[in-house]
Amino acid sequence: MKLLPHSNGLYKVNMKKKLNPKEKAKKIITIIISLLLVGFIFQRISNFISRETLKERVDYVRVDDKRLDYRIDGEGKYTVVFDGNIGTNLNQWNEISDKLLSDNVDVATFTYNRRGYGFSDSGAIRTPKEQAEDLRLLLRKAAVPSPYILVGEEYGSLVLTEFAKAYPDLVAGVVLVNPLVEDEINSDKYKRSLIFDKIRINIESIGSEIGLTTLLDKLNLSINTDEFEDKLDNRDLEEFKEHRTKSSYNKAVSNEYKNITSGSNSSQIEGVFSGKPYYLIAKPGQEVLSKLGDEALTKIYNIDYEENIISMYYPDTVITGIKQVVKQANEIERLEKKIIRIKFVRDMSYNCHIEGLY
Image (cartoon, rainbow, N blue to C red; front, side):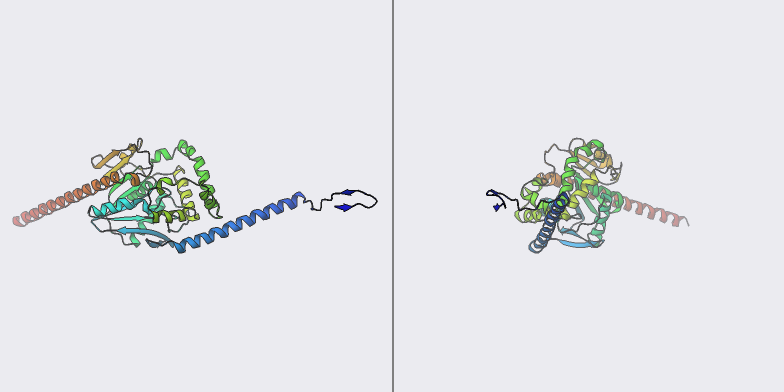
């Protein structure tokens, strides 16, 4: 209250200074920058703590100066190389790997994390073809012996088809599980169906730099990964949840969504698996990918499961496919050796006959 001169009354005086529009805008920008800075610092501290507290249970090598995680178990005539769905990690294959080894299938198993997943470093945007090149370098640097049985599910099917296309001499057989069909994902209809998912994923990718993704995750507003999480044991689940909100993970997911909606996927050419046993675990519409292999060496197993991660919910289906491919690969090798022996004996007989003439 303030007493007015020349007056016996009282009146209220607003002591607050009125801000002009320019000053208001400046204040709002300052607050936003401060919040972003706090979020950025929080995310960096969170990343550091998680790296220190989580025990790394995988090996790694560096490819183009970027760390790539991998795990190899067992030993055998073939190495089964696994590659999985968008948003998962190498633990997707734990049950299948363990079962193959306990069943003495005469294989080693190799699982890995593509760039950005798990403890693997993120980096520049990678196409499926470039990811296949990363995998080749990883296998070589980790001294993983060939021949390989490739097992790719969903997005991983694109990477491993590119691998088989580029390095056919290293591949003994292929299993594709619920694979993406390039003719479908290259269509405008498919791209439109993922518009809102892409927007959310891009928001999370940007937000992961400033702690926003962590907040969304706490409020259960982030992209749903329950189907994957529900099948992880406690230790693997703890690890995944820590990585789930990191910028490397969210950038990897965003990059792979861009890849499948780019309209430029072109690995699924007819006969790309020619001469190799090929087992296709297909939902309706995916049977068209039988064209990738030879008719005599291709087996289609039709499924109508609702789940997207078949390998975790129906592992025996995938294991049956792997065993079938291993059996066929052994038979092909046996026949090739028999042909070589026959040719050798025939050549020897011919040479002896020629020498006898002289």
